Each structure stands twice: as C-alpha cells, then as structure tokens.
Length: 366
Image (tube, rainbow, N blue to C red; front, side):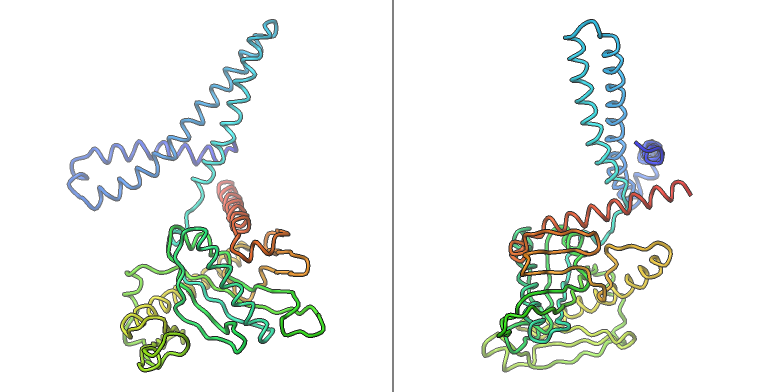
C-alpha cells in the first residue's frame, strides 16, 4: 500500500481515539445535537479504522507465513501450508486495500439524492426527437432494473411521436450517484425511419441530470424573484387536463431559469413539482460554475455536467456504444437501449474513483 494512504489511515486511528474520549465526556452527552454529530462521525471513522486494523493484522499474518516458509524448506508439507497461508493473506490484502481506497475517497453528498433527468432533442430534426424518446425508454428501463421509480413531469411531443423535450423525476437509492455521468451530448448514427434510401444519418440529443435539492435549499429562493404562470396542459390526460389551467410555469427572474410541470391533476401539486425542478436547475447552475473554476486548475473528464460535451455515440449499424470520456466501447447496443446500463455506469464510477484517488495522492505529496 502506498505511503500516502497509510498516512491517511493512521489519522483515522488517531481520530477514533479522540472521538471516543469526546463521547465519554458528560458535557457532550448533555448536548444532544453535538452528541449525534460526533456519534455519526464515530460510526464512519470506526468503520475505516476497523478495516485498517484488519489490514495491518493481515500484513502481520503474511509476514509470519513468509518466515515460516523460509524455515520449512526441508519439510514439504509445512512449506505447502505456509504457501497456502501466504496466498490467502495476499488475496485478502488486495481486497482490503480496494475497500480502504474507496472509503477514503471524498463523498459527493448529492449522490444519495433523487434526480431529475432532462432530455432535449438537438441537431437532426424529427430523428433527434425520436432518439430522445429512445433515450427516455433506455433510462426508464434502467430505472426498472434498479427498482427506482421514474415519472414524467414535463414533456413536449414532436409530430412523429418523439420528444422535443422531456423531464422525468427518478426516485430511489443512490440515483444521482449513478445517473450524474449521463449529462452531456448523446450522438446517434443510424438509418432513420423517415429515410427512404437507406442512408445513415447522425443526430444528437442533450441530457442533463440534476440532483433533487433538499427542502432547506428550496426555502432559500426568494418568492419575490419568481414569476408563476398557469396554463392549460397539452397531451394525454383526458377531459380534466383539457378543461383546467392546471399546468404551471415558474421563472426565476434573476437567472432567467424556467421550469414547468403539467403531469399532476392539480395546480398545487404541479407548482410544488415545478419549484423542485427550478431549484435543482439553479443548484446545477451553481455546481457547473464551481466545476468550471475547478477545471481551470485540474481538468476533469467525468461528471463535468457540461451539456455541450459530446460524451457518447450510439452506432446502430455496428451495434456499438462508445463513451468518449473513458474510451469505453461496448458491442451490445440493443441490450443497452433496453436499459442494460450497468457496465457503462460502473466503468464511469470506477474512472471517477481512480481520478479522485490520484488527486488525493497529489494532494498528499504537495
């Protein structure tokens, strides 16, 4: 294990002793807020310190087994037993090192949140709108595989049945942490259904994934900065949706950011949902500005959230998906379009973890 990781882990052991001392003090135990804060930290720190303790014990076991092997050259049975212990210890050390590396990585507090996924047709006209519908299907199928709930909250249909724009809300465990890498430009290469001569066309959509902010963030928006418009919703919904002005559009005047919702049957529920989307977009704007500043110091290829970036190509004639950020190519496009995104998501998460680990190493050597 690298020395900078050992230094980081040693701090956890020291901090565990400090926390145990603090939690034993009577004044801390009387301050419930402080006690709960320290208790949560104690749980996280003790988990890391416990794995680090097991790693050190495993290193000692490996050293003992190696010493036993050196002293058993004339005893084949003992040498075989020692070699078995060495192999076992090395395998466990490798597993523990991977776990400890992941534990040390900085955690994005938004990863555990629900998310809004916005899909917009780009260049390519009707074919782009149809591709937006295909992306919507891909994401909703992926949500089904993960046991998440996906709900359309805003849509603008195209003439051929695609989407000019569609926004869905996804609820479940670790939604944003899995979907955040989908933000960016998605390019498709295929023969459109409207093409009569069999020529391959290229079109594109943009996807933006926004973490749903907590209620505390939503409260920070000044109501005086909002313009709220109601209108009659269009699309599916039967007689009710055509007879009432239930759809809501909210404009944040200082930034010009707009959000709307027309899925619910009541104006009140649509307003609440639109406000959540608006808050998420404002939050994402702030996040993107901070990321742009950070990128000036250290360029990051994953998770930048820049919608103008071409992140992925879906080539139907070759059955190929390519993620350009990590040079990942998979020849299983049809299953991916049915929601089999696990290989893509896991590869992007692994890349992000490697980047974070490299950043930790640079920071430790600075």
